[in-house]
Length: 393
Length: 173
Image 1 (cartoon, one colour):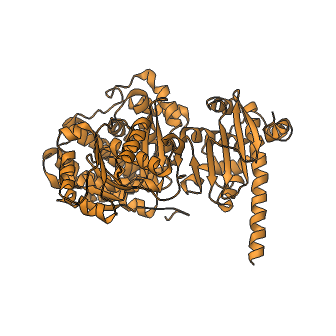
Image 2: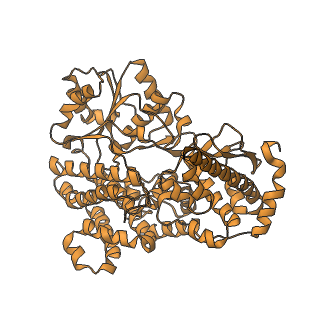
Image 3: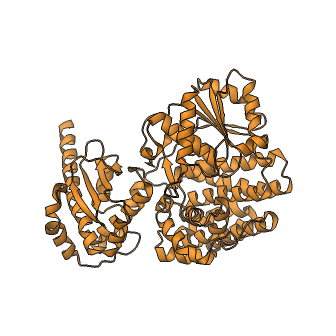
């Protein structure tokens, strides 16, 4: 069914595959930039992952004017403002962000400040930033999960209020997303599993949320198929580049999907569990996805039924009666999280992730205030959120 | 033709302005009538100004939080902490007239938000409750995520709307 109205935008150029990093110089030149600031974190430099990018840039006409490696695990307003300051002081004309979601979102925040001036806090909102971005922006993800390299969204922490703030604007979309198997090959199994579940959740939620549209659906389904096929392969052969690249593509596809169709209750609860109890985002997604799907089942059952094909494959889909496919899709997700629990140590319950029963009310209240909830196909009450979270304990 | 289209557009904007006036007073009334709205508004930082606006030139309606209540600021220009802007009057009217759910309008990108999205979620919850007072159940069944529940009758809400918030017009109270 075609929605009455929808919008879709995916303007980022995707450069994916063997040797993709070596094309960074060309991509910068194509954007008219030659003085990049490389944004990353100290750990990625230490692991010699960010250095692959820096070395590749050294062999081009571009001059790396600064390497900013002080991005924390949770990007913050202070760091964003500081990156913007360094960018201006060094006379940079592009940001090359090398890292996970935190680094990429910090780059997006800095781009907002450099384009619109003032303090990042002045620019909070959804789709309210107008005009083109003032700086070239290339994203090189080092995890296969957030999809931030192709999303128009950023999450940045307000360290004073201890809340994560959302920003969405088309000007946050990077100019170029570079996927290279070398960037994720050193990810440990636990983190690989956790980030892959983030990508899977982006895809499942975007497919079932009220903003879903024919284009985002294609990206979501392709992403799910790649995760199903290649995540076990990556766990079997963590050093193999090809399946790593496939997972990176899955995360990118899921990123395009949710950037255009949003996410829902699972992300709302996951953000809240992260804020209240410090549950890592991917772990929260793995734990909460089946519970969110069960809650949405009365209104999104048909959509989940369609996803059985991507979640479990053609044979399972064909042999499952139509009216049982939605429940089977949820079972397929549960089977995947159980597999990841056994093989990578992913937690299966909120308790295992460190959530205390007395924290449930606070998580439920925070989830109610999370913007992701607004696009969920079924709006929960506070009491319903508490019940879902208790079931996930 | 062009003149006719302009007249129709002016008419739609005038209608939106009337609905904004009712909605503006309705939200203030609901803070008094309904503890759920009161609880949400009490969570807003003191002095927060919230505005619903139609681009590019209005109409608009604003409120300011003060002492756990809301002051109706009418349609004048104010500096807003949370600004919800409908891209066009045609995108706004179905929401304002109770034809389309508020969240559906966001899903369709009919409106953009500048400010704290947490506050925006709180505002949406409040607007859902206000719609439950201002519109009959026949309409709210289609536009609200849950069946409307009221702490007072429609009539009481309209009395509060029309008479008990009048003194707050223009933010003088």
